[in-house]
Length: 390
Image (cartoon, rainbow, N blue to C red; front, top):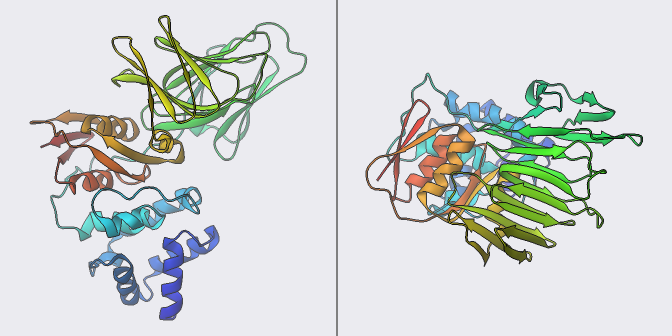
């Protein structure tokens, strides 16, 4: 490539203006090693930061390119997120696709700060799109191991798995009687999406479970039970309100978009409304939410209402971490659920608040290194355990 063409392509890539096909070609070109010196100079110009001379030859870093293919279509043309913490030049790039590639390289070998050491015997991988479906007869289907297409036909209700990783129900017209319940569950490091029999779409976060009837028609209400976290886009049905039951709380809607965080290890049970209206009730307390509002049910049973920025709340459905003035314990709970790790605090916990965003498909070391750059916290990795140090 001539220098001007390469420079133009690099800038297009950073801005997310390349098509998926052209982005794949560009990444393949980078990996080929051609024009390596010129490319280093251009990256340095764009990021205003020095480039390690061995950067484009490190096999461990080149492996990031291979891991990028699967997630590339999810990153192209996405809205840019907030830059990550304090490093403005690299942070600005981290908000785009190239952050997955180049910023990851810097955290591996370019930045001179405390290095995270991890046993080669234990690999901490990001989460994946997977879940387990438990049928009414008790049979379990592990969705990651199941081919796309129809996966079950129970009592005349067909269940299919789409090629974009979604569970879809089709209910026949002549179905009579009670058809029972299904349960969709995720472990730590798993997430999944489902289209319920009434057309409602649900994104299920890690370490969560959703119990729902195979058929809503016989019920006066469309009622589901949730543990953990889920985002709902409820299909409108004036005659049949949609009800979400969680521990100590009930949410009732007709058709709307909202997020429910009901993890047992969180300090409060939070319901956040993005569109429409919902009514949240608990122990004779009731709140009606408008878009941009969040209810929180504390451990002592008090229900409160506040205005919030909804973007960080639902960032997880776009495969991102987004922190907004979060304390270290809140940050680490999210990391622990997604990367399937144990977290141990040593010494005094920092009181600093953290903000910024980064892809959930990044290596855990990239996330921790960016947190370390604030100077407020340090980490040590031993196997599948993260030690949080002052």
